[in-house]
Length: 240
Image (cartoon, rainbow, N blue to C red):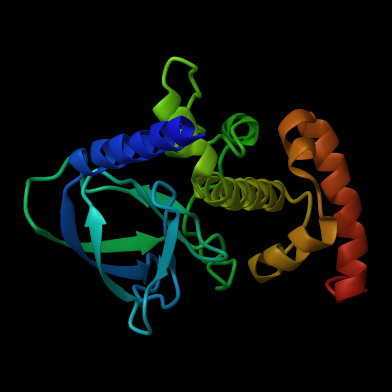
């Protein structure tokens, strides 16, 4: 039993030494703004799946924190597209001042103002099939019996739960993004007449699973969305 405890202690010490030797701590001064309004965003989550930590911007959309230069971080905020960033490839320095923007899924302005041209069905189909693809930083490390230190560290770490949580958030973001691209397309083709400010409510009303959007044909999705739209339009008063 003493031998086993000794081995475990050596594994943990070796693992810690390896991890710390591979990192360089730097200061990050981060400001996050809305890409459309240019207003700062308070409460944006900054998630580090490697260290299993989550931080948040303050009331002015600002965060100052020490990070490892090699880490990849994720910005997440409800109704905005999640992004990932790193300072690993930038010039070496002890302090990094970052100004990052998040793009909202919906602008909430009049639909008569066109911000972006709707995507084609072919482009949307490619997006549909890519919903929820996991960024490589969130992939579970391969457990090798030839590397007991990595296997033991992964078994004891809290990283797995944080990775799974972020993967679900990214998949949900991807699904909403693709759904809204479809709604833009259907509006342009006059298959529906849904104001943009109703997009979020309509998506919740439909409650279509991710697998439906990924695996069904354009025609099947269009018919389903059109059926839901006819019901939603009457219930919400869009049509009499």
